[in-house]
Image 1: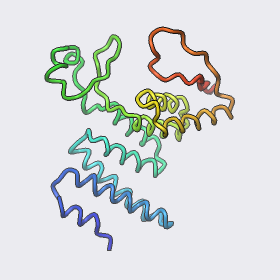
Image 2 (image 1 turned 120 degrees about the vertical axis):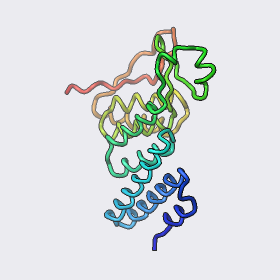
Image 3 (image 1 turned 180 degrees about the vertical axis):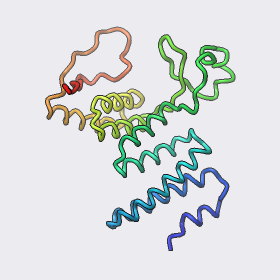
Image 4 (image 1 turned 90 degrees about the vertical axis):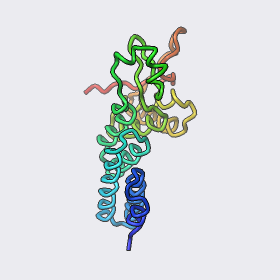
Length: 212
């Protein structure tokens, strides 16, 4: 019998990480079922996985790996809007939000609030985000499947702004540009004039918005 999740739970029944680890095992079991042409069984294990990840999230709403796992389940199920929402929540980190009035206080930023990093914004108080090249690439992939081409482009570029050599973002952005070129929706743009550096990497290309 398949008792791996039961054994894992018994080992540490009250440990918050148990939910995440058991959920990950359920995903592996679902993949095993899918590879053997058992979609109904795979769905059952994906349901169990998602339940575990949500249980973890209720206890620790800021654990990055848990968001990646939930997004993975939604992508497997082709629920791309839910996947995008999950990655947006990961990046925006609403559970870590702090009142702007406190963030405007430099003394607090250097003392009581220094336990987490903040993104500086011109003319606005800084904000804390869980940004990473992987998170933006996964978000871009979900946008791509939703045919939100401009959103995907921007997210891939944000990934490359954080890690210029992040292979997945570079490769997938190239695939996106090839697709847009085949549809006549990719145009070359001139390099920006000298001055303040751009917030996103310059590629020499831009996606033309849809005429819809």
